[in-house]
Length: 211
Length: 211
DNA sequence: CTAATATTGTTCAACCATTCACATTTAGAC
DNA sequence: GTCTAAATGTGAATGGTTGAACAATATTAG
Image (cartoon, rainbow over all chains, first blue to last red; front, side, top):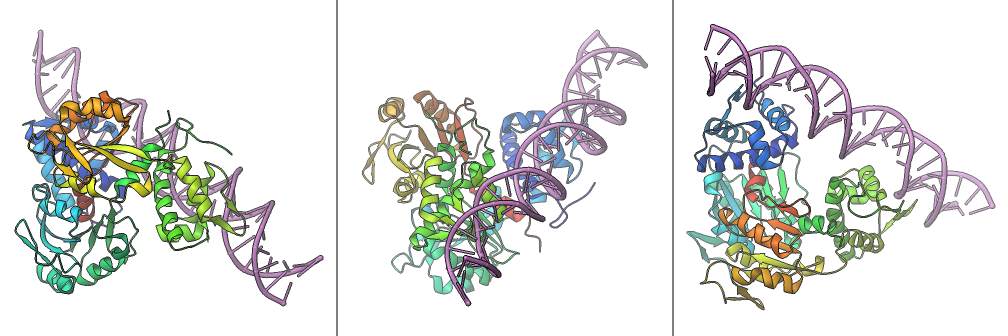
């Protein structure tokens, strides 16, 4: 089977696991591991081997019976499926402590992303240099994002400002937003949003922390 | 029905949505909204009203027919269920840019958590003051965590160090770990782990970003 | 070469989660 | 006081995801 592309009916939950497989495969590459199996991979990730085989089968046949999967080949295939076999320029909006940490993070580039512009509403921060980038004002955000062809943005502003920022990003052509503000964003159907709120994860765990 | 507590068979996916409901309810409180409905709440969150009613029904009957839910009452009930109607002392391990951002974040306290200690392996960082906390060395980590009764920790160290840190945390009595390092942790069954890796979220979105 | 072992891709059954639909209750209008 | 509209909580139906099992195939050992 060769089945790929959006709207082709591959469950979103399957797409959500591919990056996890990718991360594990990358680690295996670093360990100079040449072959793996669904069982091996599943062991590391706490996922059943059947599920891994089924997930991959949505996109093609990547393994060999008896042998398993060539790590480097499978890695490249999944990179291609997820479209991270290229580099996505990314904008970061909000340069507080978190925005700064994001801007300095070295982990994006090897995995398909690169921060190319920083924005903040605070005039006191505009002009600051972080790494080799200069913080820009909200006024130039739309034109700058358009100019650089940015389609992916990370939002690290206070909750109160997040929706307005998102609106401006969408207006400028951004199609994927990773939102760190603790609020749901309303965006057009064709714009993707993912959320990161550490407190949500913490609260999910305390439920189970009975004495 | 009065059904609460771990092992009582409430699906984990339901527990995972409660913090999201809580966040929306908190926002309604700020807006001085007195009543809400499953429909209203679902609208804001992009969740069906039926699902919200069913989720809540696992824990009791919190609404009134015809009227809906009293925001403040439902808020307190969910806070109680999740055990965030108290303050959990929290340790942060790894004081790079991210650890620093976490340590300075003002969003934990109003939602049930408080960072009470910081640790780093780098002797150059030990002794630094961040907010009103002093960075401590790994040597004193176990004793300090035990002394303060910390059960919740956030890990913001490089992937290579994360497993070792987790082992030490578990040894010290930590039962819930929020891991920012891009690697799966092996922990005993009764220890809970949640993961935050922004790149995972980004890669999940680029799949859909076909031209 | 043959037998034994390992592993894939896929089918099917079991399980889990979501949505539908409705009886029931409440508030508010007239 | 009665009627209408709004909303809950839940049982039944639907839809989706996971796991077990197996035929097919590759590798390795003898």
